[in-house]
Picture 1 (cartoon, rainbow, N blue to C red):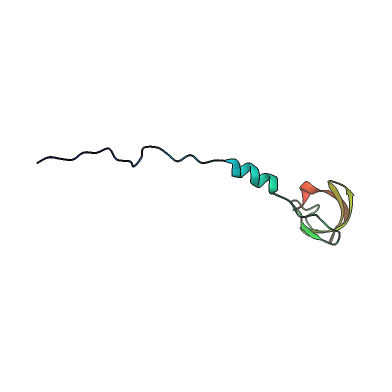
Picture 2: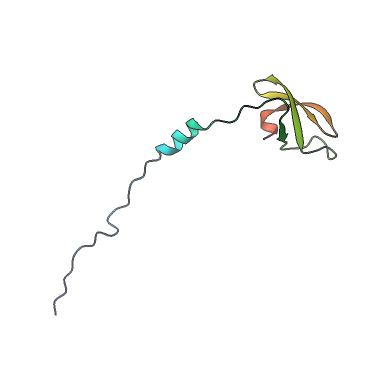
Length: 83
């Protein structure tokens, strides 16, 4: 009895993947522009009695907004404080 042994093509190498899609997706990622009268979710509440959402009133700077928080009042929020 003779065995025919041939080298298998399985497992000879891993396919190479390009990770360029990651950089391209980050470049094309755009966040919606915030508008006044938009409700946002707060990452931290200013007091234990206040709501966890705020109503944006007007933009103070490129990174901060004047907002109204129910059961708290007005506050200037940085973009990192809400989503």
